[in-house]
Amino acid sequence: MSKVNAVVYTSNTGHTYEYAKMVAEYTGLPVYSLKEKNKLQKNSSVIYMGWLFAGTVKGYRKAIKRFKVAAVIGVGLCGTGELTEKVRISNLIPENVALFTVQGGMNHGKLKGINKLMINALMKSMSGKSDMSKEEAERLALLRQGGYFVSRDNLADFFKWYNTNNI
Ligand SMILES: Cc1cc2nc3c(=O)[nH]c(=O)nc-3n(C[C@H](O)[C@H](O)[C@H](O)COP(=O)(O)O)c2cc1C
Image (cartoon, rainbow, N blue to C red; front, top):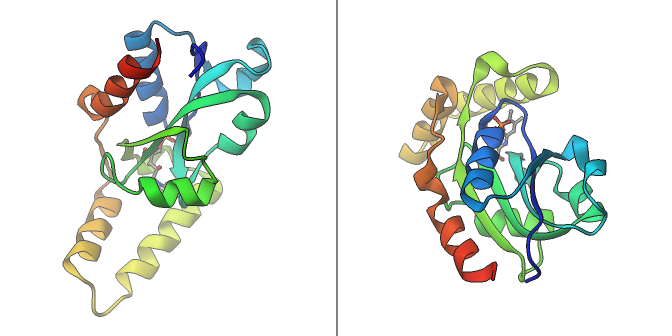
């Protein structure tokens, strides 16, 4: 892997931004929002971080057009380390690119527009199900209650990967 130059992120309600700052602090790399992509040279090697949106990593497709993405961190409501295989397939992330998922949270107060509508529709359709499994009921409760789960511990696997690979 070529030496990584920066951390680039896309965040909607702030969880991914919080994680991006932690990664930047740990690695000593500069951190940029994907909107600031022109501040970085084309083909720079980056750690890309985006929030999970219906199984996709927001901004990933745009990021690969400009940068060499060395690793991807998806921030979702799912548990840390969950969904990685699904996310890899849905986003066409090559096998040689390291992929991590970390739990961010759900802040209903910060959601707007289409994102708010989508979450409300999802909660409605989930709650209408008559034979809900225990897992589905737990997922719905988490979605309804929301919460903030950002923690440096959730980045442990990423830090291990970074220390082993960025030499
Ligand atoms: C419309 C919408 C779709 C979402 N889809 C997923 C998903 O597929 N998987 C998941 O784990 N989290 C999903 N989430 C939860 C977000 O990824 C989570 O709230 C994340 O922490 C947001 O990061 P941010 O604060 O940086 O925007 C979704 C949230 C919204 C609003």
